Length: 295
Image (tube, rainbow, N blue to C red; front, top):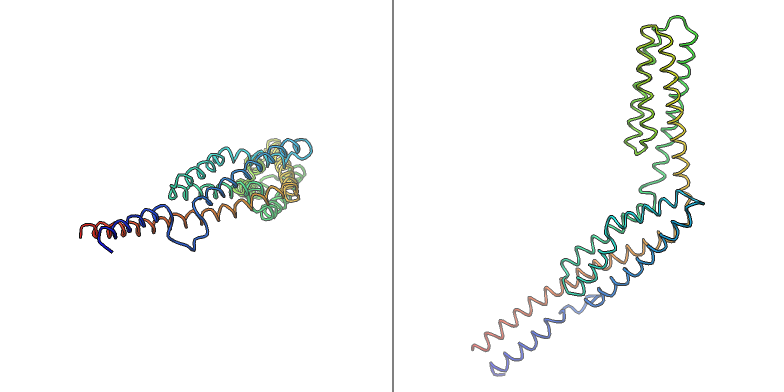
């Protein structure tokens, strides 16, 4: 073949390869990736509508699950998930696969966070077990404070009661901090306030100020009782979430979307890599064509 003819042949081949990836074994084409992302967007829109309907339906009959739906919808807005899905499809359609891959990974992260919300934002069994432990310790604190209150009323010498009252305050403050750290702030803050009252009672007992000690102890008892009641209501709420079954359909649909989004990420990366390799081969052929034409 003459150099000029060879050059024309190589240029034609390069042009053909520049619009079609060379790798034959890749599972998805750019068009397939774009279509799959559009389908995920369509299914996601349906899922959002289901969440909105369920939030309204459960508002009266099951407020805790309705709140989970509302929280999930808030998370969708905060993460701009809807626009991310649109942007991912547009980038894939335009052939901007590097940025499309990044956006697709952002979509996956947002979908996973949304699933976490619907599953109770963490391990419900673990949170329940920890809360049960807090409740047991709270009940023990309450009983021992009641005992100190009785002794304050009955005993003539009050100073010896100052030390056990002070130790109980230290224990209460530690428990309150642990509860706050474990995301039970309402109960935890009340227990810490009770600890402050216990400190006041300890100081009054040391000075044999019976009336002041009794008043502080009564306040501590009231705060501990409130904290215990709040903790038990939190436990009931967690149990209700654990029993929830009406969100299962949405969770399963979301899990399926997550798996499909993972596949899209893989396909997008494959398309990007294939196009990059095709580009290298095209450049090689163009150089060959130029050399042949020059020869």
